[in-house]
Image (cartoon, rainbow, N blue to C red; front, side, top):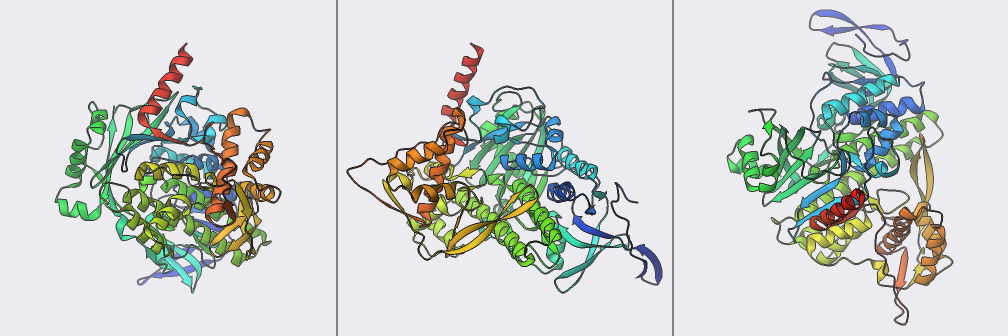
Length: 608
């Protein structure tokens, strides 16, 4: 029985399928797109396809009955923009999930508690909920109860016209060479489509059937053990419904504390699978051991009650990356494409962003205006790099924990795995400052980290001050010799726009956004004083509250261009250099004491 609204009736004939000695009849239904999996990745694909091309018939096949529980509650701000594009932001906001302002960590060489805020907590203004996706809420994220969140997204896809079949298991992926010819279901039906999307999570139904290998870094073969608690205390409350996730490191792993609502919280431990096996402890004993060693988190659970009793959740938490993400008529997205360790809370972000990219790619395939080989290659290379960079950064974070003794040597191995032969000091610099700065087309950044934030993380992990390259010089010159023209894709309003770029080796310079702005300025000016005046003139119309961040974004682009060799710098000792600090909102890393004082001062000021 079909659940939902069918968009286009099948014109395919009835066929005979043989099961043992019995002949059964099954309908072969033809769709434009069939998506395996009704989680965030699958529903993002379906919703965006139906939004931008309502004539496409889209079928979601989901093996479970929603609502159903799932791990992965903590989001990053990048998801909020995608929810808004899907048209589901208001529905998610109406569920009254806690607003994630950032996270609080105990991690790295210094060993104190520090905060990483997406938006300065002291500037977060109380506002009634549900709120709109505007102003400060464009910089925040949600902490969600997945049973509720995933069902909201699935039902939203239905309202847009996608057909949803729950409790429907895909048993076989039929294919001829690299082309899928159909999906055989438990019922014996064979469902066919022109495009197939694997959003089945770590199961990777299409990935496995098509023989796509999966790379697993041996140093990130972890497990997760967790439980849910009622009546746990929130460590910090910010405005109406705002809070931070708590992350506390241990010598053998780390603990998370995620408020999911006014009464429910998720608490768990991530540790190497080898440690779990050698400990001889049950999952419950392992989690309770970790809580006993982390008094701060244990204190939040003093009056809390486990909602699961003796049943403790566990899962294999291995970071991995598929060797390719697209075939002749199929795509991998979400965890079927790859998974990065949850220390960065990037799992759902990778799911939503890769799924959005799949939807855009299929939309362009349908239009037939762009080269199909380029579309597949662009999707594969961009998203594999994105996942790979998240994995590298997770390795970097673990290398900075107390269980690693030589951080720089570890970074050398990470760089080697990425294809770079670098000395320890060079590898440190590459990874911490430029090794993961190519995710966005128009600006220098990675997930929820811009280059400024990444340098602050490096400083906190190493105990060594991290300087900006652009602060070492006061004379700059473009270095475009030997560059070849190529192009990248920029996703906007349902279209993939080809963006011209320059390329030298592995380094790419897009002719768009902050990069192009700095190229234009450097063609006219060489002195840092004149460059700063030109940037300030470009930002003159930006509201005062965001002007400093906008200026800083231009110089982060300059920083990336210096690191990648697109710009050379010289120092004239007779002239001053630029001392530019990041301020005026945006991402902020600071000690927990400093953040707490700023928040309390803001509360007193508002109270007065």
